[in-house]
Image (cartoon, rainbow over all chains, first blue to last red; front, side, top):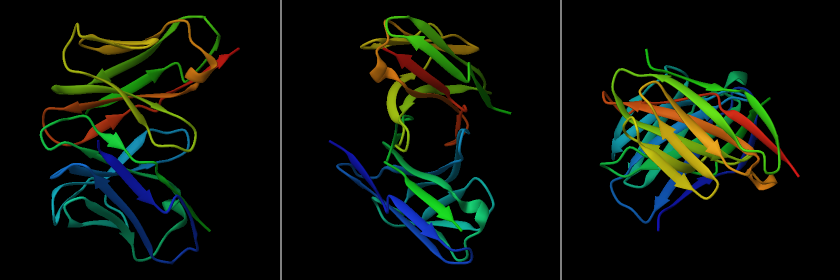
Length: 112
Length: 110
């Protein structure tokens, strides 16, 4: 069966510091991968998606970036965090030829 | 523009009191409509995918239905463990973007 991991689970960072969140998927190959942000009481906002190694599409212009160095690894980064970057970050995967997305446990980020 | 609106924002039920959650959507071409359950501090858990009007799917006390403009999540004889936020989402035929609603928070009291 497939499993998706995210770490860290919780992160507290000062404004202006860098960020690296990691997501890995097990038990599948060539998945589509997604990064979402969820603000309190609001719907999920798609940040990035990837259909293959090195292929990244951005949905929202901002100070975040994403990379996919390996088939089942997806990384969300920032060079300098803003207060507005606080939120719950979710990674998801879907099979190559299917629409349904499966989510990881999430990372709660607090920028102070 | 694709849009998803869920109602009510919150719903309080007594254990055993059946009800329905609504998801109204606007999409240029529907590739799929999705229902998820989300517990506090956790990632969404997949429940159902519906593809065309008239389709229905069931899982335990939950039943999802789909029309051309909306979807309902029916909860029959809910239990306290059904308390969670239920998210609805749609994906159009034009790309990878999935649009999520803000969710309905369900509280079931014993």
